[in-house]
Length: 168
Image (tube, rainbow, N blue to C red; front, side, top):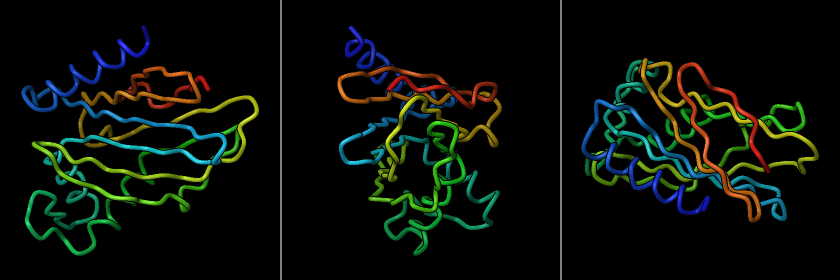
């Protein structure tokens, strides 16, 4: 049933991301790989909104949809994820400096960002702080599908709910 719910959320968010842009939604897939001590992440964000947010904070144009994007686009995408995604394991904040940006691509109106970060063994509690676009858009919603082993669960972050406990 959870897989069906996840598929419905992904389907509906795809429709929202491509048709109804005034609804500001990002979709993230996060997989905790305990045996590899890392988190594998993918983020789908409206390219136009991400461009505008980075332009406002960094005073540069990424050029995500251009044939030749800004030469430092990887640096700025990594910095954006480091500034807007945070994991807290057993009360300790995970160092985002170790985040690795694997790749990114644009598809339709969105940019997909693929990254990973080393994670310690989590004993009791895992939290995620997600502020993607919440500092830039007042009605932002961030849907997160979190997978740990055979568990899969959806979470909703927004301007009012930026920190949640993840079920691992």
